[in-house]
Structure formats: C-alpha cells, structure tokens
Length: 495
Image 1: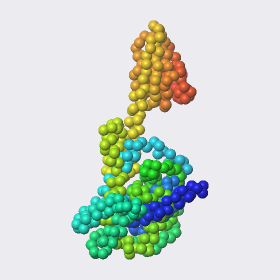
Image 2: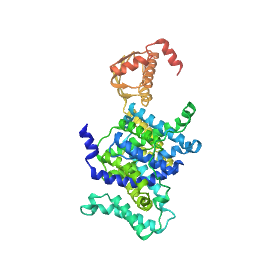
Image 3: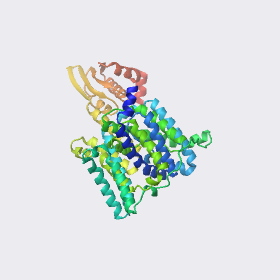
Image 4: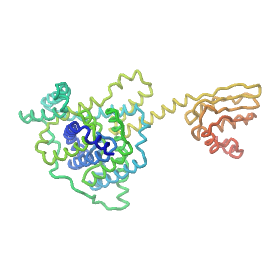
C-alpha cells in the first residue's frame, strides 16, 4: 500500500510539478469557454476544474489522467441552465456523481473490453479534429500578429526539446506560454488574451448546497440530464483512460475510475462547479510534458485555483495564440496518423467502423453518439463474420440414414444459414444431427433447430440429435419444443 502510494505520488516529482503548471495554464481558457457554452458564469467552470482535478487525483483509477470541466458535458447542460438555472445544474451535478459511483460498484467500467480498437482509433482521430476545429475561432478575423505568434509557438514546442540538457528538463509547452506572454507584454502587441475570455474569480470556492426543492418534481427535472451527463462522462473518461494506458504502457482500474469520477463530480457540485470528466487533450499535454503520477493531476487543479485567484493579473496577459499553439500540438499528437497508412492493411469492416466513428463524432460533436455508432457497427460486422464460419457437413451413412455434422457457432446471425444447409426433400428413414463441434447460443438458434427437426419429421424421417455440449443441451432443453407435440403445433402455427 505504502509502496503503491509512493509510486503514484512521489516517483516523478519534478516532471509532475512542471506538467501540472502547463496543464493548469491550458485549462483556464477552456474552463471559461465551456462555462460560456453551458450558459453559466466562468467561475463555475474554473471551480469545477479545480475540484474535479484535485479529487480525482486522490480517488481516481488512472494516475496522470486529467479530469475537469469539458465541452462534451457543457453541451448537455445548456437546456437545463436556460430553463431552470444554475441551482438545478448543481443538483444535476450531484446526481450525476451518485449515478457514476453506482456504475463503478456495478463494474460497468469493465464494459470497455467490448469497445474495439477501431472504435478507439476513430474516437481519438475525431477528438483530434475537434480540438483543432476549436482553435479556428482564435485564428479567424485576427491580425497577422496572431499567426506569427502561433507559428512561433509551434516552433518553440517542437524545437526546444532538441536543446542539450534544458530541452529535456523543462516542458516545451511551458516555455512557449512564458516566452510568448513575455514578448506580447514587452512589445505591447494587441492580441486576444486569456483576460478577454471572461472574468476570473477573485475568491476561493466555498461549500454551496443547491437551493432546490427536495421533491420528486425536482428529481424528474434533473434525472434525464444527470443520466446523460453520467453516461457521456464515463464514456469519455474510460476512452481517455484507455488511451493514456497505451501512451504510458501501464494499466488502470476502470471501475475505480468510475467511482472516482462520481466522487469528483459530487465535490464539484458542492463547491459551485459544473459536472466534468476526463479530458483527452489535457491528459495528452500532461503525458507529453512529463506528467505520469497522481501528483501531476493534483498540481494541475491546485495551480489552476492559485493562478486564477492570486495571479489573475499575470494570467490575464497570456496571449490566446500561445495556448492555441499548445492545443494544435495536442491535436497533431492525438491524431493516429498510422491509421491512414493502415487503411490498405486493415479489413474493410475495421476501416468502416473507424471512419464512421470519426464522421459521427465530428458531425454531432457528441462523443457518446459516435462511440455508440462505432460499437454498434463493430458488433454487426463481428456477428456477420462469426456467422459465416458455421458449416453443416452432410454424409450418407447408408441408403436409409443421412448424417449432418454441424461445425461452428449457431446464433441469430447464422440461424438462417443453418436451416438452409439441410435437404428436407431427400427421402431417408433417419436423420442424425451431430452437434459435437458446434455451440448454440440463443433462443433464435434453438428455434432454428426446432424448425429443422420438425420439418424432417413432417417428411417422415426419424430425427436423432447427438453430441450436444452441456451448455447447448441446457439451452435446448429450456427453450426447445420439437419433442413436445402440443408446443410443436403452436410453434408451426406461428410460422
């Protein structure tokens, strides 16, 4: 236990501290922007980012992953805030946390194993595109200074690491932000700054219980929003955790992360903040800046609140061009460029799943819908593929006996093929159906077996089924009707 805590908190102190500063600087304008999207005061997003980052660092299941207020969650809050106000949003945030904790205890985080690699790749690529698109408003209808500073920022980010010694010690995004801020202040360059995004809070967050009626009517108002927030938050967090697992070549506890996200959102709601979740962009900034442990996430939240409350006069001076350069770096680093070259190598079905996920996410700006479509397509392609691997071999034992050997998986996708594999018009006295090398999975497959047996018997043949495994025999005994005359009549009457 002690060793694990040392590993999570103290194994990478310098890297985590520096990465935390970079993430905190990048979080500030995004938290303000997400607050504006949700229709609430900027401090709601900033307080949420502080609370969620600090709490998740302690109770989360993925060290080094950054959680805070996010755009995906903010989009789901718009109608609630507009129709009922901030207090109901805070109540919905608390309920969101409770639902996420329940999801953790129900071990829903384990469902990530059903998300295929193609869906994850599509999710990552779509998010990279959305991150880049989010920077375009800062690059349109602006003076040439903005373009020069953005290009200079990218140059610093990518070239600084090549400097001897110092290039490996200090994260290049931090150098980019500090240098461009200094240049903008020294020369008095008139570019858009963090201060132009909105008013920064001047006090620390305080305990704030939502002032809403504690009755069924309130529950019915906030429940639909809380369910949506809980699902999207967990989905984005689980996907981000998987990506950080790959980046750091480590594993994480997805069910603990579900609980952690819930506790963090409850903390945010009680401190006047909106619901949030893991942020893939900030998590990648953290990892690429050298952050690996829980200390980096904790410091990101801590530095954020210190900066906006006590160093607000300095933070307001940071040019948005510097942060745009950092986010473009994140976008470039996030996109899986190998997925483009692999289009010729991967199966068509995998490519369709990946591209469909990208298109739906980018078109709807809703990560949950995109991932749902990707998982649905992947499931259909998989079922179709497995269904084609089922074969029925026919052998003539003698003039009176025909043996059918079933090989493979029989379920809803292969049931029609299973029925079509038998010759019901052949005149034989006995039919043996050998199921030794097959498995029946569902009610549809059992129904198809009933059809085959009943059709052969109606043609005057005696039917014997052999070789059933224990699992197949159990489901056939439970749902099969071919040995029950009364049920056979009902069965055929319905077809």
